[in-house]
Length: 271
Image (tube, rainbow, N blue to C red; front, side, top):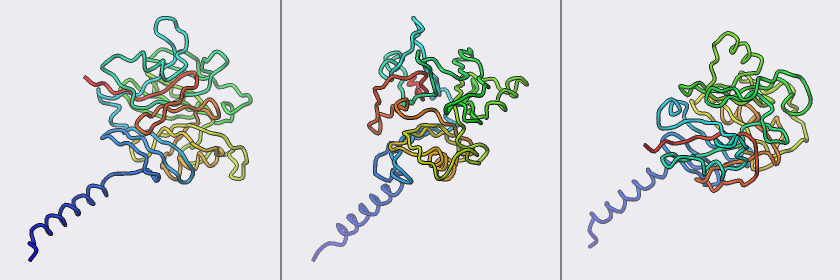
């Protein structure tokens, strides 16, 4: 006669395994990485995209920091690539994930407001003009030295600068805004046929900062709808598109080699 104990042990082990599996968040295609404070995932719906997020609270600690990277420290030449950026990091720091951080000119210099470690590199651009940057309203992704992250429409941000309410430690200006106070950009057409690879960032209601790279070509409206309805980000900003979009997320096998201007990334301090 078979013993009851082995059956009970096998049942218990199976139940435990199922319980552990149920607690692991997965991308819809099974490609994901998760830590306590940040994660990167590849998703298939509503379209194919990769998203890396970090808890806003983590950025106010000493362990993690959100940073902009543009120029080499010794020559002021642009870094251009993720590989060059990685080579500049101290031994006690790792780059969790990164992407391009906004639009740039033929010299890889940013065309919008840029602040790095409290130093203004480019003035706030409130001019009207053509192209995506000037598809108003545009906005500024910025954060204080304490790590509080915001996405603010450019004119509202200018008011905050003048009043002293905004004291950016890092900032990058781009456009257009994708979502403004929980509303999709008023000029986006749901029936648009302009399809591009796009990337952007959102400050979201669940307390995370989301960085999204579309793996397939999408319209502005589709991209904004993802931030508003799927990721629940009341404010989101388009960073760039087409050949200018790039993602570094080694935990899900992403490491673009293309050249770009300013980069944005989460750095973990191992000390």
